[in-house]
Image (cartoon, rainbow, N blue to C red; front, top):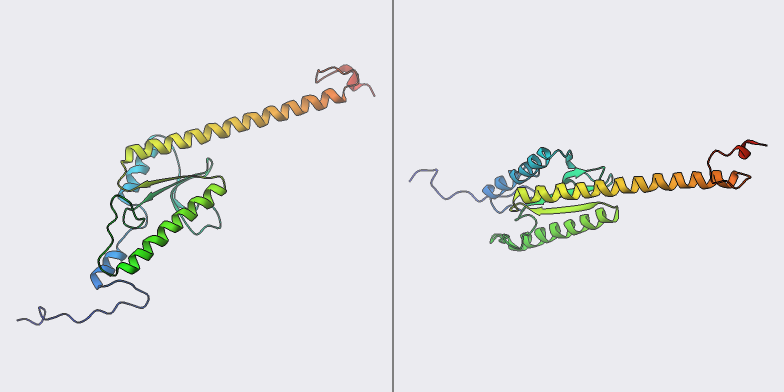
Amino acid sequence: MSEQSAVPESWTPPKGSWASSAANRRSMLGNRNRDTSPERALRSLVHAAGLRYRVAAKPLPGMRRTADMVFRPTRVAVFIDGCFWHGCPEHFVPPKTNPGYWRDKIGRNVQRDRDTDARLAEAGWLVLRFWEHDPAEACSQAVCEAVGARRQEAAAARVAAQEGKLQGRQSASAEACRCGSPQTRCASARIP
């Protein structure tokens, strides 16, 4: 029996690590927090539809959380949640090793997601969340429709504000006119 096939030495995790083995630690360190395949597929389709966005950006200045895609002018934040890390009801399978830690960890992730949604909604943002297993085409369509609807709402609000300003100017000039004419340029308004 060779020296390498002998019983391995016991592994001691680094301080602060919850990994149960060196292999698990390597696996956890290798997990990407951005530019995953589902994110890239969605971004490609949204970009092809003509929309532009920020990637892995903070929607709110003081917030320590980043959205996968951010449409700042329309205030739309898109998150693509991993089935394992965010506790997908369809695909999440709790690990058998160190189950207490993982139950708490996934629970905190879900709680943080809900807190993020609430804080963004309170600030006037629309939050779109998709699971990594959702078809990219359906997600892309939902994102494009939401951003388009928010753009239309913003345009309608701008038009209404401009009309309100115009009506305010007209009523102010009509009140200033001595003859009571509703015209904005009345000859009697120029007489001192």
